[in-house]
Structures are given as structure tokens and as C-alpha cells.
Image 1 (cartoon, one colour):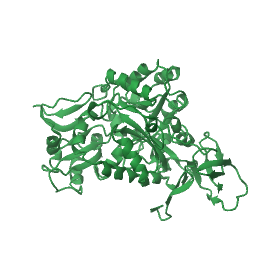
Image 2: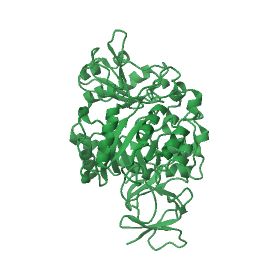
Image 3: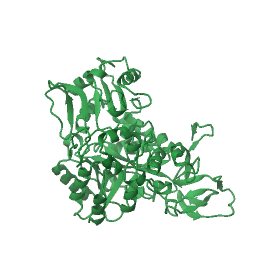
Image 4: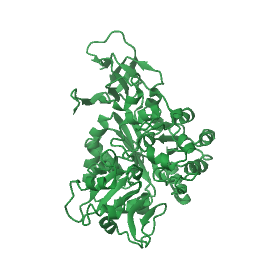
Length: 535
């Protein structure tokens, strides 16, 4: 039986200009889309509201989102200096408990602190000397911890720096609590990660409401545990996690163990393994992204990817029929990824890119020309929210001419078909980083939260930004059901907005609220008129 939806402003995702005023749904799929003058009996009246395809977040970290759910935000405007961070952490609900009860924070950016430096173990010892304290940096690559946390992680002056990472040290070699890049930060992350399978399932399942409220109908977990996360996410989906999930398994796996070979059942379904994830460098805000031009404070970052790992991961992905996704922010890291893969034959055909470049922050016109000329098929997932939320760090770290060309979304839009915007939540200094309309505002205005110009020449339009969260994003990651469009035959997952995003002031795009989220033709979320959410 058809269910009709009429009297809407329906952005179909078929193109930048394709609009309709009505559609029909049958058996969870769009059955008809077009314009109607007369509403059929029993039709749902959209009351002139804007309707868009369900949103796809193809680069996010639900594991981390759930992990920081109980952590203390150490971001502006709540925290502006180190004493403010200490006070905030002392308000953690576990403050004052036992010697193995962790006090956790997230989101600091030293460029936003009044002292202009990274807090150390000595600073965090002022929170507690008996309880472990750990705070994730805004990029979620690095972090800081107190002396007790160093003890629990077994980090001493004899602990070597992990490959592609650095343990901060005093002049005498003793660790100072600064954990630069993933290899170092993970030493403490592993010490604090004691959640069992059931607890992890519950915390991930609880994110279902989070994604419905944001209109997100499919997500890609970009740092999936290769041993347990397929089971965790499938169980979570049975217990309330609503979006489709594409998992990208971390290479080289847990404690360097090789990844197991995949079965067909692992690569199919609404929760599936979609690829393997590697890191070619670090972050720009942390000055660890690998660049050809030195940072303003010195250094060019560094490569974090061994040639043997790149070769082995590629062979595994080809053998198992999944994508390779490589974190590459600096131009040297991006160039290395292109150099390595460009001559290869793609192994996934034309449906999806065999290789994804994650972030591509300093991608150049030359890079894009080489991508277009390559035998390999490339996709890009990029994040304008970084420039929007972290403008001070980017301006302090990058030469003006380099900063001007960062995140060239308009140029990428014209050059790369499989292209997506995403937020990389929670890995930036913003309180609600996976609010899609914050990223859309950043891409459309190219103005930072503080009004600074962040490359207005690379601004795109609202329809273009929506396509990069819908139809164009659907070309980056392998979801099922034809998501990303309101078109006959596709899964009827769509979003009703509280305002017309095509006519409002672009500076107010981030005030857009999802009024309703529909999954496969059923109303899954409705925001109550008072502003409180209801389902």
C-alpha cells in the first residue's frame, strides 16, 4: 500500500536543482517522486517544510563518541585556561573515588588556552595525585595525563617512543604527561579501557537517539576494533542503534595481530566491514601532519605509515574485497598515498572507490590532477569543521599562503566524484561536532566560528553541501538500499527540517534543527514543538 507525502519542498539529491513537492512510499522504499497538484486521501501533509535525503556521515568514531559521553568537556567557552581545565576536571562525577577510577576529559586545544601551551602531568596532578586523569586532545590523536595515569599505563623514562608517536619528556628523560600522536596516546587509552562487551554494546546502542536527532541514517566507524566491533555493532543494532554502519578495521589490528580473512556475511548487511584504516600522518592542529612546507613554529610533521604495513593492508583489502582508507592531512602524506596507489588497478570496480583519502586537508590542484589521471579509483572524505572550530591553531601553524588553500572543497567538488563532507566526531574542538549543519555552514560561508576568513574562495552552495552529505557521500562508502537520494526504488529514509535551508542567511545554517527522521518509511524521530525531543 502506498503512503503519500505531499506539499513539501523536497530536495531529491538527484542534482543541485532537482526539487519535487511530493513522493510516495511502499514497503519501506520510495515508489514515486514528483509534483502533485491534488493530494490523495490520507496523505501526510508536509506543510511546506524542507525534506532532504537521510544524512550520511562517512567518517566518524561512535566508539569514541560513546567513550567521551561521561567525560568533562575541556573546550571553549567552558574552559579557557589551565586553571579552568583543572576546575572542570575536579567536577567529574568520579572525582574523589578510588585509585583506579579515571577522571576523563576531552577536547582541549592548547592554542585556545590562555597560557598557549599544552598542560602537563604536573598541571593535572593538581586535579588528583591518587586518581588517574586523562584528557583527549581535540584531534583525538594526542592527549595528556597525570602521574598516576602514567603509572597505570607503565610509562617510565625507559619506555621507548612508539613508531610515529612521541612520549613527552622532561630534560632528565622522565615522562611529562604529554602523549603525542596515536601510538603514545594509546598506551594510556589501553590502560583506561576496561569496558566489557555488554557495556560497549549498551553504550553504542544508546547512540541511536543521538543519530536520529541529527538526521543521520548511515555512519562509517573509522577506527573499528578488528576483533570485536563487528559483533558489538551488530548487537547494538539489535538493541537500538538505528543507522546503517560501515566498519573500517584498524591496521595492523590489536597488538599487531594480523586481520582475519572475511566471509561474505562480514561484508554484507546493515552493519558490515567496509574497509581497513591506516594513518599516513598526524594532525595540522597538533603540527604532526606531514607537510612539504615547515610549520610556522618549525618542523614538517612526520610520516606514521611503514611501507610494509601499507603493502600488507592493501593486499588484505584486495583479497577480501574491501576498501583501503588512509588518514592523510599533510600534502606530503597525500602525495605518498597517490604515488603508491595511482598505478594500481582498482579491485572494487566502479561502484565505490577502492581507496579513500581521509581529510585531504592540504590537497593541491596537482594532487587532484593526478587522482583524475590515475588507474586507481579514489574517494575523499573531508572536514571543513576543523578550520571552522580550530581556526586559531591552523593560523598559528600554517603559513598564510598554505592556510588560504586548506580544505579546497570547491575545487574538490569539481574534480572528484566520490566526495563527502563529515565531522570526524568527536575529534575537534566543538561541543556538538556531528551536527551536520555546523559543517554545512562552514563549507558554505568559509568563515570560522569567530568570523575569520577560512578560504571564502573555496565556498560551495547549500545544495552542493547537501549533496556531499547525501548522494555524493553515498559514492564514498558502501551502504545498502540506495541511500542518499529521494528516488524511486531507494530506501525511504529521509529528514524533515524546521526551516528552508535554501533561503535563510547562510550564517544561520547551524541553527537548523531536524524536525523528523524517517527510516525505511517509518517515523523514527519527531522533535516535540516545545523543543524537547520525542519519538
